[in-house]
Image (cartoon, rainbow, N blue to C red; front, side):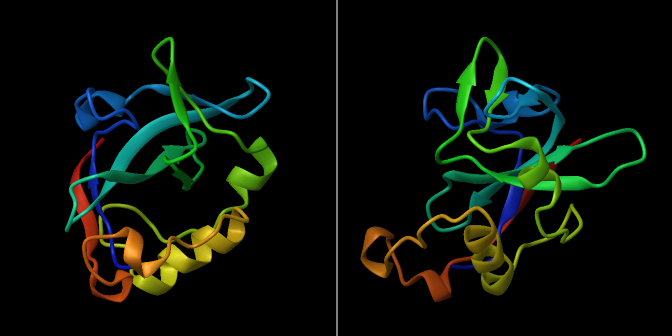
Length: 134
C-alpha cells in the first residue's frame, strides 16, 4: 500500500480517468451518494484505485474504492450502502493518501488488502497521489 494521487478517472481502462470528475455516484441501491470530486491513481501503475465523492454542499468528501465499482450509464455505481460510504474515514482531499490511510479504507469497506505479489512492487513502496480534481 502507499499514498495515492488523484485524477479524474474511471474504473475501465479504456476510459480516460479524468472523465469521472463531476459524474454522479450511486450506492448499491441506486441512491445518489454525491458527485465524484477526485480520482486517486497508483503512482507506480497509473491505475485508478480510489475516488473521493462530494456527499453534499456542506459535506465532506468520502473515499470509495474503484476496483469493485462500475461506470453504468455515465454514473459511478459503488457496491456499498450509502451509510457505509458516508462513514468512511475522512482524510481530506487534494493530497496523497498514506499506506496507513489506504489500509484503513480497505478495512472500512471489508475488502481484502491486495497481496504484495499482485503489484509491480511491494505495496509498502507504492505511492498514490493526486493528479487532478474538482
